[in-house]
Length: 141
Length: 410
Picture (spheres, rainbow over the protein chains, first blue to last red):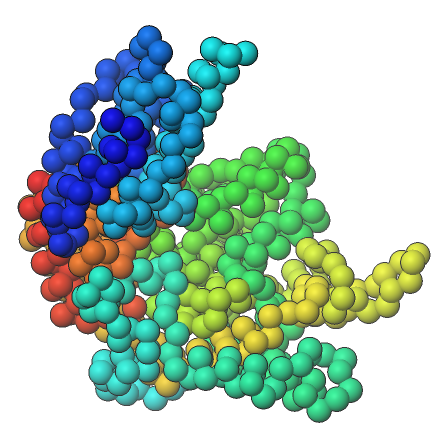
């Protein structure tokens, strides 16, 4: 599945909900399903500090693919983190670097990505892209 | 002072057009008043009138519009003087807000009086705006910031404060009312103790001026800072009150037009008070709008507002305490209508996001009080702050919304 296939899958899932309460309930479910991050990976280096909520992000190469683990101290943010990893984790750095993320806008949760929300998500996406660029550079110096 | 009147909440609410709207298909409940207050129609009309009919740069103008608006600007200064009972309009400096006012004093006073190893006393519950300017000054001058601790209720520990005052203390800078806890600090006592040692005191009045009568002569504070936008006035306005004897001695904080007496390339002499501290074109529209807001408040009565808001606080405190697992941070004996809280195990951001969807506007996070949050061992809180136009029915909605939050995350 391509990045855009995954995004479409999420958009289709959210199309089933007609109000915010259902969407939030689903995000809460997703936050519970996010595979737990090893506490040892919750280092200062991996911490993305938002003004409101914190996000931890760790990256590892698995063969040719870049795998992310992440967590957040706020549930709504964690649910969105789970969605981001579903789209971006386990892909080649090049794919991640070139990914154009539109699904959050499409599922009506755009406000969570405004830079002024400072929940750490915008910084998380920037960091994911930075990892992808760094690993790509490592491969093709 | 204005005559005491009966408090007609319906009339007051009708004066604030912004309150009558829906957000996320729910009636807006605006509980973020400590961040900024909404504007009554007379303030909006005044700003509109100036831009529609009266705009012109003030002071030194020879033409009709300039003279007319200069007079309104100076009348605004007189209104502010009267509102805080300052002895003279020379002591009323227009600024862009509380932060600007405090920075001005930290810079000017610091330049003139602070030397290595001097001490500046602040309290643990200060807003960052009353911490950072003093820290920067102390770095520049090799001086030290001393912090008076608070107790678990969020009250300044007066014994500790009295012990901290010393011959090295150059100034005390203290907030009148805490923005995240609502504590009303006993600034009169704080000032008396400092003055016994001839130490001046700056009062950060950002959260007090809109909630209770303030009399700078009764307080006997040396400086008093507040913001126009928190007192139902336009954004980007503020006031620094300073006793004339200080303002005469202090060097200007910013320089440029308006604040000069004579300029040559060799030397510049400064204008008299208050203009010495108002470099550049001032925000005259904002200042006149702010004076309009003060008139509006006086027409309702500051004591009446204080009494009504106290009722809201008591009602909200009782209702919120009913919610199992809810902890209120800031339980001082004397408080204004601010409730900071957390619900057991639920992140403040999650709570705020759900409240927003239910039409309730609150603030979440550390409220520019990181050291204070550290004191309580938390990352942040959810803060509801009430104003003169809020109602008990809105507090009932907040209660219901919080029950929903608990259902979702509990």
